[in-house]
Length: 124
Picture 1 (cartoon, one colour):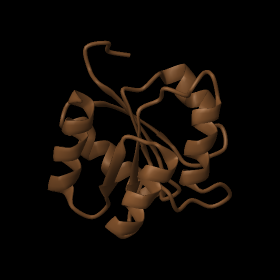
Picture 2 (tube, helix red, strand yellow; picture 1 turned 30 degrees about the vertical axis):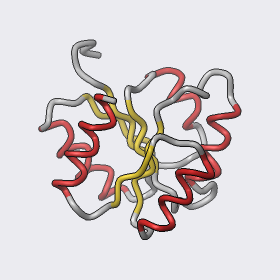
Picture 3 (cartoon, rainbow, N blue to C red; picture 1 turned 180 degrees about the horizontal axis):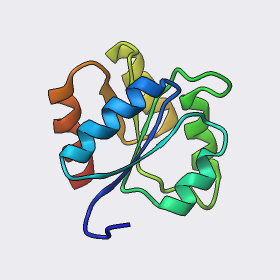
Picture 4 (cartoon, helix red, strand yellow; picture 1 turned 90 degrees about the horizontal axis):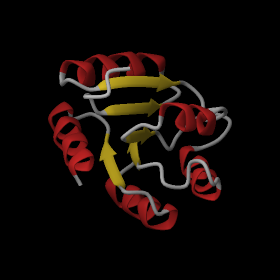
């Protein structure tokens, strides 16, 4: 692990999105790890200690908003910097951010917005 780079963990059930987003963020100079399911994510976060966790809300098995609640309840992951990265509409995302007490959200689908907001959340 290169400790000079900011580390991002992307949690999403869509393997194609994981691969594409990982490559995009790696090109921007970040070290990017991916995790395909919600289960096991707390352990991965505890091991990697990412600077930012991009978490999809709509995942099979355990939804991302429920996972964010579990992360907040876990002593080892309660301070993980979680941002929802989802295709849900922005009104729904704003409510989810407020209810789940995560840092914010990034809507899927706009690469420019993804890059800008990742940089914002990493610098705030």
